[in-house]
Length: 188
Image (cartoon, rainbow, N blue to C red; front, top):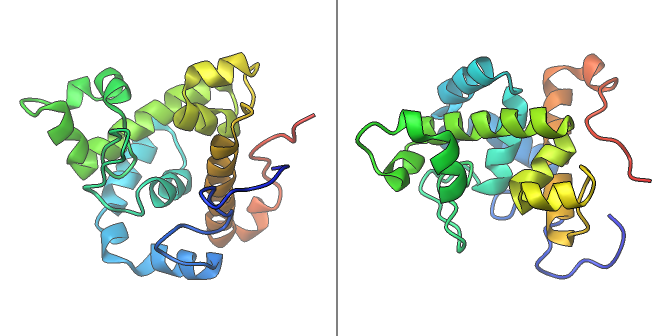
């Protein structure tokens, strides 16, 4: 990302409140009880929706730091920080008698909803970085940018952070194969 970063822009490779180094974060993602508790839901969501489990892990680490009851100032809820608009579109069949907020605070419902949404965004935009940008800034921002990364510093930093963590998780899981994967295109 070009340009000056202000103090509110996340530093790539760092998840606030967890670690300042990627190796420490990777270790935390292996041993933390809050991460282990979500593993069955991550496996299920990856299988059902065809999204890489490591990508889901990276999104949750960046979005909520694995705090299942996280609610953002903008009202995004739970592990994957799902908004009420997205939750209404993607979670409706999973809610049963729960309200949308109750459902999105449930870790399984939140992860399944987020994975379904991510799979849809990846299909629409055809690229992981564009899907993550749509996740963060909205589909309209990505469409206005021609299906690419919108010129929004916060979104660029967010996508970079998720992709860096995803890359590190892939390298840990598949060291030889990860070197040959291309997860986003360079911008012209």
